[in-house]
Amino acid sequence: MIAALLFVALAGQAAPAQAAPAPAPQGEPMACTIGPVERSFGGSDWAVFACSDGKSAVVLSKPGSPAAPFYFAIQPQPDGHFDIAGEGTGDKALSEAAGNALRDLGKAGLAQLVADARATAKKGR
Image 1 (cartoon, rainbow, N blue to C red):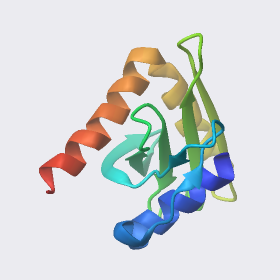
Image 2 (image 1 turned 30 degrees about the horizontal axis):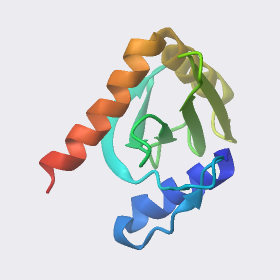
Image 3 (image 1 turned 180 degrees about the horizontal axis):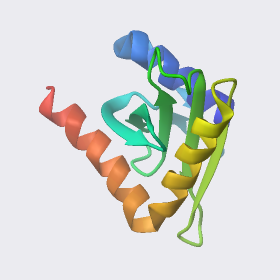
Image 4 (image 1 turned 180 degrees about the vertical axis):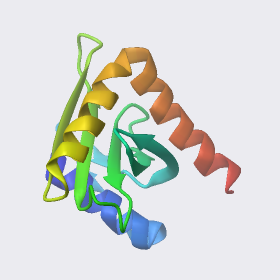
C-alpha cells in the first residue's frame, strides 16, 4: 500500500491529471494527488498530498532538500490513530526529525494536515 501511495503521489507531483489510481487495501481505487500543501517538519521542507479516501496522506520531501528523497505515508486506523511509515535515502537525521514532528501532531493535527492539503487543492480550482 505504501509503495502504491508513493507512486501515485509522485506521478501526481509531475502531472496530477495523468496519475493512475492505486488499489487501496479494500480494493477501492485511491490516488494521493490532492494538494499539495507545503509544510516544514524537522527542519526541512515537505509537500503534503491528501488521498482520495479523504483521510490518508503522503508527505514528500521537496526537491533539493537534504532530506530528499524521502516520503511518509500517513494512514488512519480503525482505532482512530494514524500509522506513519517512511522510506527514502535522504539525510537520516532530517527524515527522523520530520517523522517525529509528524507523530507529535497527534490525531487531530494529522487530520488537519489532510484537510489543509484538500483545502489547498480546492483553492487552486
